[in-house]
Image 1 (cartoon, rainbow, N blue to C red):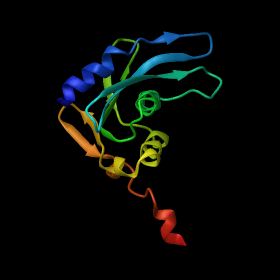
Image 2 (image 1 turned 45 degrees about the horizontal axis):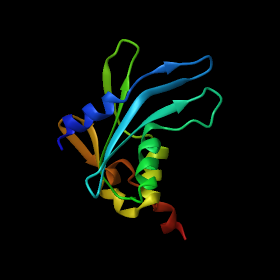
Image 3 (image 1 turned 180 degrees about the vertical axis):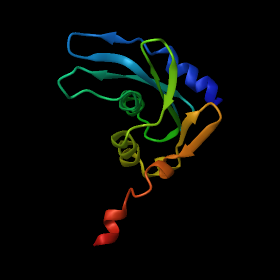
Length: 133
C-alpha cells in the first residue's frame, strides 16, 4: 500500500465533533501491521484529561487482534476549514509503539505522501537511560 493510500484511509475516518468541553475525532490514524492488516483509530479529547491519541486507538485495535508489530503508520489532522495535514506521532505515542514491541523501532512513520522515517529516527534516545547505570 502506498503512503497516499494509507493517508486516505486515515482521512476517511476523521469526523470531528465538538462538545461542550472537548473535541473528538479531528485526528485519524491508519496503520499497517506486520501481517498486512490495516487498523484505524481516532483521537478523543474530552477536555478534562484522560483522552487518547488516534495512534493509541489504532494500536489498541491492533493489540485486540493479537498483533504488536507495526509496519507503517500515519496520523492526519483536519482543521476547521477541512484542510488535511499529515502529523507525526507525539512523544507519548512514539514511546508506546516502542514499548509494545522493540522491533517497532523499524516502523515506517509517514511524514507526507512521499516521505517516511523510521520510528528510531523520531525516538533517538529510547534507551539512553540504560547507559547511565
